[in-house]
Image 1 (cartoon, helix red, strand yellow):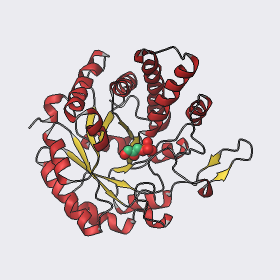
Image 2 (spheres, protein in one colour; image 1 turned 90 degrees about the vertical axis):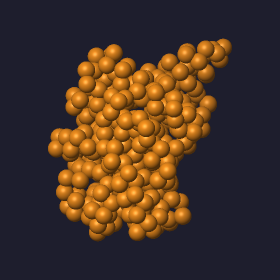
Image 3 (cartoon, protein in one colour; image 1 turned 180 degrees about the vertical axis):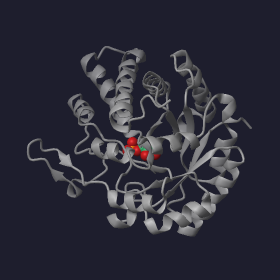
Image 4 (cartoon, protein in one colour; image 1 turned 45 degrees about the vertical axis):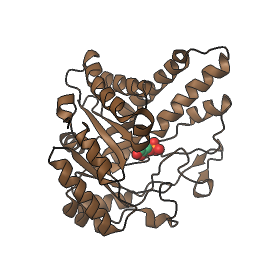
Length: 332
Ligand code: 13P
């Protein structure tokens, strides 16, 4: 058993309380490799933003959980080296799908875990979430749960409306599970194709897709039922058009990729939404930078020469999100 406290990490409790009061959101950036982690820590240290390092089950399989944990521990030291005196860094399991996986992360130094039982029937979601909460809270590890289904994750749910979290369930769910934060579904979804072209309109000037707005009425209803309770938004990449264009310009093929407009995320950050998950945007930045180097310098074969520019572009992206979208700069 390794406690996250020994690693210099923090849980989300205080971070979320401050974010709700202050009208900003904490960035939750996924990481799988060293360059992503360096870029996240540099951006957070330079902007003094609290940050959540997210590890998915896939990342654990890709990078090895032991390595990821030591990387997170190293990230705390790296942040200090960069002049961030008291780094506020959370190591979080993204989309835990079983009690065993969540327990193993708690035992392994994570400071926060998500149990995503949103695909299960309501009572089963409650039972599994409560089991994880009861275990994690013994070690002061915070737990995120999910209610409602994000499009793109649960494809068999066909009606757009039925994806949304039902506000009438949230009090019962939060009370009976004891979860620390709640991921809700109000129209975001994972990946670079969040909406089909049919769900969007087209800007007549640019020809680009304009997605439908998030369901702020559902968010408002949830906040009314659970005043001051930490709310989480998954699937919140904006799919910046400049990265999509760069990828397409240098031999990629991402037609009609579309994300959540940043103004909507800015608006959400000012509410009880205190954690915003971003993964795809960093994948796009990485890919765009690498493709550019490969196209412009086909003789290049030193990974530092293409992963370095990818890291720089991701750092720029993370800083932009922190300062211009989430507003978490200067809060740690
Ligand atoms: P994006 O695919 O929109 O980046 O969402 C990431 C996410 O929610 C991870 O849980």
